[in-house]
Image (cartoon, rainbow, N blue to C red; front, side):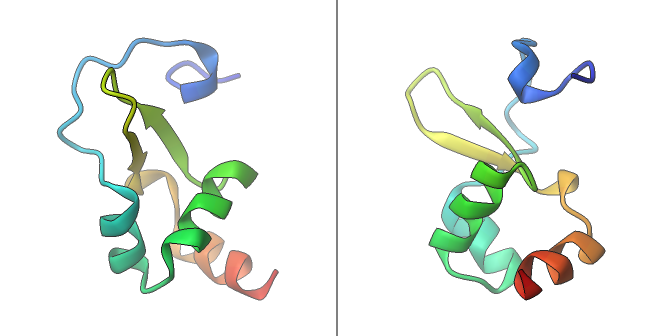
Length: 72
């Protein structure tokens, strides 16, 4: 796994650049279930906050990947 990969166990020091599932769905014009599916398939990096809430890193998903995910 790459350094900084959320599955690597790396500690994130800033949460400001992350979005809620709802905000991510709005940004990509998809349903929240689609965003959750993209996270489970590894298309989007996701982080669990200390409170238990899930946040996604919108920068990890490119337009090409969005199109491919929509066609899948």
